[in-house]
Length: 367
Image 1 (cartoon, rainbow, N blue to C red):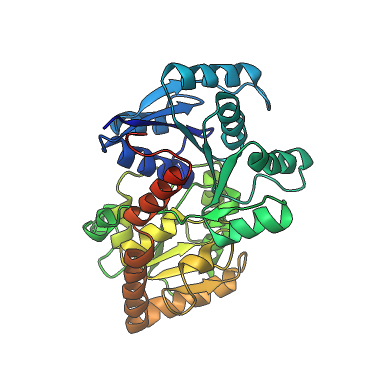
Image 2 (cartoon, helix red, strand yellow):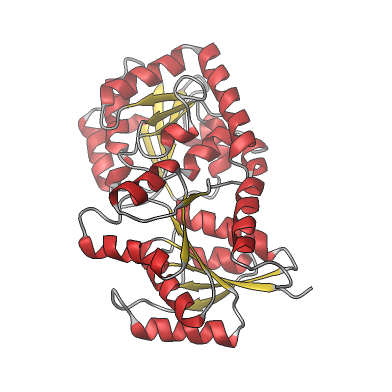
């Protein structure tokens, strides 16, 4: 059986949700002798290192303008030289360029959309998204919420939904970290979050919520890096809780962190389909998330966690107080969250869906 060659494309370098989904798909295919995987990236760095470790061959090819003809020529040449059978692109810029390159080369393209924030009222971007179907690409949304945005607001037709998936065992089997990791007493209650420190992620609201809590034993631990770090430190100091807010930066031990948290919070103002939320579920976390984007599709209110309005520190503080104060409720929601992750958000389910979609486009091992 000959190997079917897939080219993966993304414009970002991670570490983020879309990049980790790409790693999961590329790495799984690369381990299968029926598939060969290459990737086009904009730059070296974290994502490149992760893909190399998975056995994916890389081409570093910067995109220099909104429509880069030189970039397209290079990709089309690579398709023909390496007998690539399908492009699977992620995120806005590579979805458009991947679809154009695939059209020129006469191969199929799958274009996955991970988020809602690319478009706004940008007419040019909206038209570019509408062009994907005319170019022959199969458009995939990672949540029903994003599919609705693409179809109803942007006018993109025939959008599929394939939920993201994670390696559940990594999070289920992780061990806990001792409270002494942060110099905390053993009876400290830890509220945690994992995600890039961008304004849209809502960490300011989480700091405010902890400041408004009437529990002095609550410590906030956030794993992630980004432009909001200095502001969050100032806010914690202004609210008198600097000694109870711990910003860890990028961490490679997220599964262990999730196991250590007493409550996990996703306070975002906007989400596509959050891998971090799925990971917290797999780790059996008690969860509070904002009622935005794909979050209510992942965590159902009162069944696997508690949902609150975005930007409301009082509502978030109340929900956290409920989870931390009612151990039986927290345990029940956490157990249900882990079971839902097993039932719906495993890596195998996502890979089966994408393999099926590739086959629909005429690409399978031996083709």
